Length: 309
Image (tube, rainbow, N blue to C red; front, side):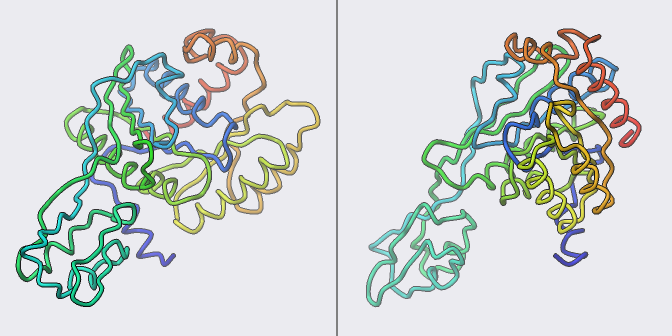
């Protein structure tokens, strides 16, 4: 990706620091880190907006014991063709980059809803105004609060595949809240992996924390995240979770980070108190602030505050 393209994609509409928490593979503790950072910073007096952008499988609410209800529908344009008005010219299909509209000679264009991105170009070019503005529901956005912590959750509708659009809508909703909410920090919890939904969630972040573990698969997927961060030109730091597990490959993780010039800013130990907090649906920094994992996460929160404050 060229530098000017990366700069354009990383522009955000609010003057509020954005921290993304990501990870190359599922199960590394990415969401646990995001939730506990948000809770720890909130306990330190910061106003934090936590955004769950893992729209295929959002679980921030689960970790916080929040019930999601009264969600706002995420609606996108869907063309509805008036067959009586349609002159079968095919111009709508010509401008459809997604090939959601397919035109055969002398026939009304066929519409494949699952391919439609909702751009609306077809409606703009129709010479006889034969395309009406319909819509489809891609998912929902939920706004919740627990204590002093506010949470925005995006959720993709079952059977839908356009998760990047739902990620964008969720972040846009959070940005609108931030324009009026007086927040000190926005924390975005991304999906695991390096696919388009993750890229969309990372865009605009002032800093991304890549959460990994000292395992061979953890090292493999961390390298993919480090490569992605270099490609889209975002600042990265690494959090090593379960850093003290037996037979771990911590030295390999450190060597990998050194090769990319990325710092490991936190080591979180394996801690049964963290598991107990998870079962009780409470951040461990609140459940037992003196346990090893809570202390490591609180120190990490101080680092984030200094780095983005």
